Amino acid sequence: MVEDPDAPRGTWLHWLVWNIPVTHRIREDDVPGDQGLNDFERVNYGGPCPPSGTHRYFFKVYALDCLLDLPRGSTRKEVDEAMSSHIIAYGDIVGIYKKRNL
Image (cartoon, rainbow, N blue to C red; front, top):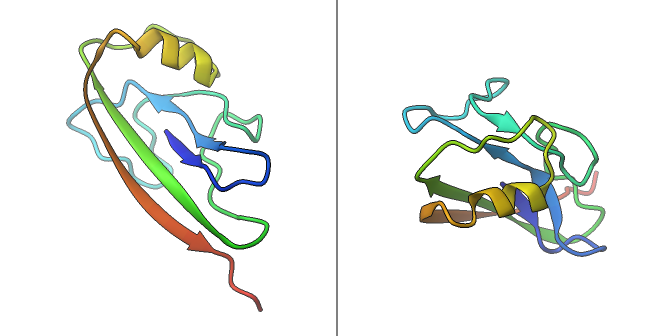
């Protein structure tokens, strides 16, 4: 999942994806998993575009002991509940982005 904790209305979910096979890398326009509903109310990746200032983007990855049996378009709450007792490892990386003034 990708979140922006610096959004004006609180943490903003940019992407929710699960069931990514361990042998895959995510490449542009190729999502080898299932996607859920983000805070843009869409089922896709919503890239960074902060209204102002510098924002941090947390890319969070969870290793699970099973695949999640959830339909496309599931919510963050549904994914969190489904994976809560199946997390065996976790990692994250933070990216920083600020819109350029033209």
